[in-house]
Image (cartoon, rainbow, N blue to C red; front, side, top):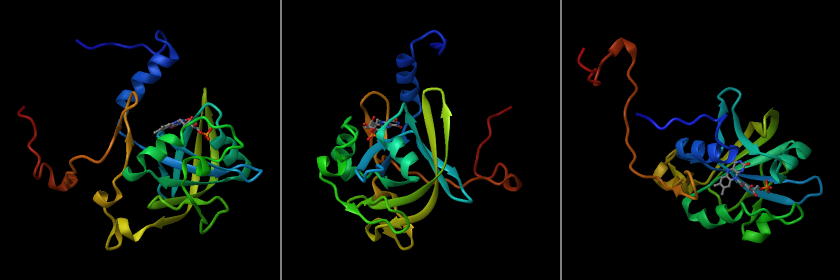
Length: 207
Ligand SMILES: Cc1cc2nc3c(=O)[nH]c(=O)nc-3n(C[C@H](O)[C@H](O)[C@H](O)COP(=O)(O)O)c2cc1C
């Protein structure tokens, strides 16, 4: 027996809450952008992932029309700042629905740091910045997918082990359902099995 839910029967809000609770954990893009008038903006987006490997692209989704989307459309630029655990309170506070003329940078007390390749600044306190130019937007119902071409990746040496980022140093935050968030839990490593080695270390079910 399962609990069956038809998106055409329950309300938008109800289905959104359910879907958000099962597509978890979601990484958080802490998106900095700038309005045409130069007001800096910062907002978390957990509908976020890598969109393309070569050329490198990332994507986030604006549910409805928000300042971040307006700014990215106006300037063609944004930065995805890494939402690290020590920034928990600030990341959440940046989701407050401030009017467009208020900069979340000032309101929540984080500092802009110049980007290397675009005019939109990074968050100085965040250990990783992905500088992007707008590749395309895709309108889907009530939401808009924003796809950015990655122009530069800036990493703080404090999160690196040699030349690679280390998960225990990055300490990512993630979004769950309801008002729940998670931090990094147990980390496991397993190698992918090539078909030529099948079943290798995997024990297939008995026929
Ligand atoms: C952790 C977290 C993740 C969020 N993810 C999204 C998202 O993926 N898409 C979205 O439209 N809003 C998301 N929100 C809500 C926006 O951050 C919020 O509406 C914010 O005020 C938008 O700011 P802006 O108008 O300055 O762009 C999220 C909020 C939080 C706290």
